Length: 266
Length: 253
Image (spheres, one colour):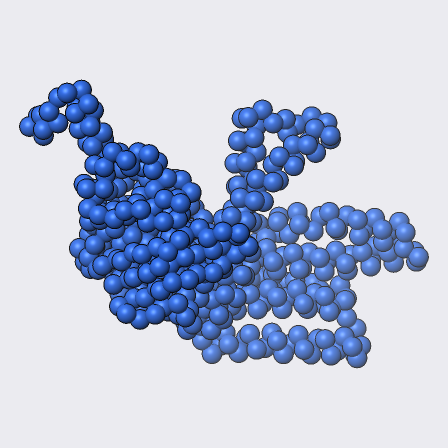
């Protein structure tokens, strides 16, 4: 389990903390969604949970961060990378520029971990298949569209077969079909035992989650099952978009109609 | 190339004995040629150097035409100024000036040719894999590689920014003042965007274990061997001899 207890974080040179006493637990085999408005601190929490802050980003972190009871705050990034990997928002910026093909890009992470050659190849092949981009394997990743690059980046992270996968808006750049593919791949990774933290804005992402944590102004405001959290009418006041189904149910209720009619119609 | 792993390349690979060499050997030859061209002075010696380390390998690699064309293009601006200065303003006779200019132009052409030949026959990923194979740390290879890889990326970003700013009515043509104003509006987002991208890339590489100590698993290994290793040391030895000779002034060139 990856555990954050009472974690606060301040960016270098910042006058105030971006995260305040955050408590979060990521369990193997589960997907935890991270919802919140713009500037709520979702990306920062991803950086802290993924270990990039403060190791690479700088700044100051307080509180406890451990994996399976082991304090990881003194671990160097390369040691943490064996267990935790992080996907960021800008897909083009995450390409290594070293690999000339999509296959090489996806295999880049496992190769860096020093895995045996056959394992590197098989994990890259599996990740390409999971994300549905086998047909792009010989393409130059820098020449793909933003959505395709996002799929390549996610495949590259999955190929590392991490125990903990932190994703900052993984489906933000994707069309509905590609987003569904990625969410399916994330679910598959969780089924294989990975603990996933996924910050997202798009409501369809919550369908892949076992739990959703709501972040507001750097604080965890609520945590619970997606249905429970997202059916709460207050979430729109926190800048979180309601899933279409929840919105429809609410509007039916407001119009004096039985929301269960929707269920029987489908 | 390794028999076990195809180089994962999006571009067509050249197939010649020159392409088959370990990229490190090609790099050593290119750097050795540049250094030797700086040390050697006479036209005969420079011609021999150019023939041996640029023209013959370029012919073997079936790149002779492109190497000549690009080398001439690269050397042209400097070459023209060298000829003009030496022929017109040389303290000796115009013939002496022309001779001097020929030597300098030949030196520039040789250096440009070595760089072009290396660029034309070596892909960045191939060089990177070779450097990693030879134990160069990942951070160093990244600096070497990304310095070159960022240039086309930056050019592409500049083009995107230009198009976006033009679509919003920025005048990037016209007189010098207008162009100057336009340059600021283009340079700021290009540079800031590039800086943000470098920051993101640094984070992404860290999380993907790029800075992990030890050699990563190589998807491709270069065709190195005792002959090439000997050749690389040979190039270094020849360079040392040339420098010493240059200081002592024994040879006519």
